[in-house]
Image (cartoon, rainbow, N blue to C red):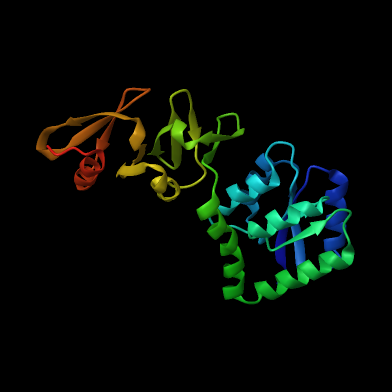
Length: 254
């Protein structure tokens, strides 16, 4: 069974050329295309390809940043960077990309890449190890910004310090700042994992809060507590099981 691929490039001719070359090899099937990072995320979520051929220079968000975002989603793909500049190769491999291809495309070079991917596809352990490369890199080098989506579909990168809290609301995870609300692509648990080393704490099954933005802690009845978040003066509940940890972190002895 062929592995599937999506091509992300803002140049139509480059996409067409790559599709044409890949079509010569029956072990890879191109199932989608996109010309921006925003569309890339949408196409990936819909099609779940095995591999993404990703142009480093995109008009809205760089390919490098797009790779970082995609790698944090569930079931991330292998990534092959495409670039006209050889200088990007080092960063591409540091990011854990399976390979990189230079423009103008060379059919023989692409064949080598496809053959390598085919061999990985035949070995689940090798495949997972390659996918984990980029995740491992990002876990230690991830920028201090969170990719979020506005209601109009635009993807913003907001500094961690601007986040007041994250809230699970139905099937959505909202990111609340002093000025706006956004949607996070992932679960609240995934948000917690991403932010827990950045001064955030899961205080309730529905909330992850920025500890630096807590303005007050309000004792309630039967050992329950609320916290007040600055900026919006919002009261959030604290689970009984987490009260002790929260008080310890904030230095509250009473």
